[in-house]
Length: 220
Image (tube, rainbow, N blue to C red; front, side, top):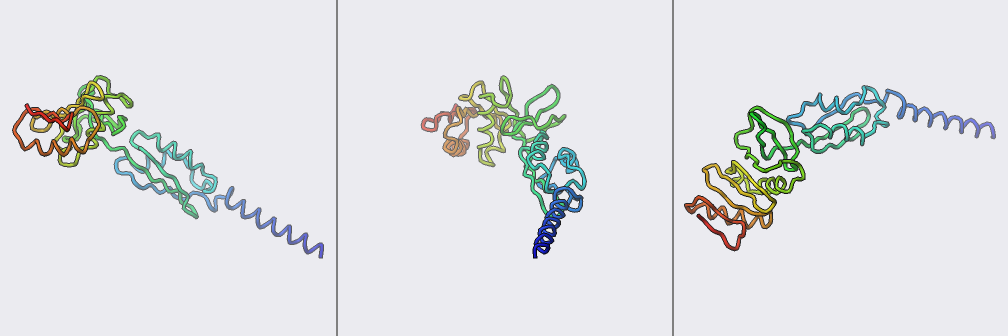
């Protein structure tokens, strides 16, 4: 009876040890493919290279947080989610940064996202991307962040008419529309009311529309 118990214990230990070896050390359940989803402009091969996960590395021991951090270090990537898909796939879902404005950089244009992060520098920017005019364009700069927040918050049709957004402070954002008319927007407060009133006021002929205070709108 005692020998039987010893045998069962050894058998159990052997099974557990074999299973642990298969899962944590063996290439049997290793990474055989890295699936990339959500990418549009960033090549999948670039994301795989940044992930730095060797073929057949045990899937169970892949440092998911480490892979996520390395992928998010790609400038065009805003966020990433990494999951194990058994038996041998590592799935990386990325969210790319979207350009909302451009900043002149010599003869080129720096495309920036809503957080003021430079995504890339191009010789020619997308034609409908508004130009940002601030003293010191940078992530965290109050004037920059206010101008970008205004642009991002505009309704689709109205936003598509903006060709330039300028600000010297966070309280004096000004928009230039495609037809040359100027909109004094002011601060980032009450965006819905300002957009609604502006849409209505644009039906009237004027050169300057001041909606900085939605309760007292002026046209010039």
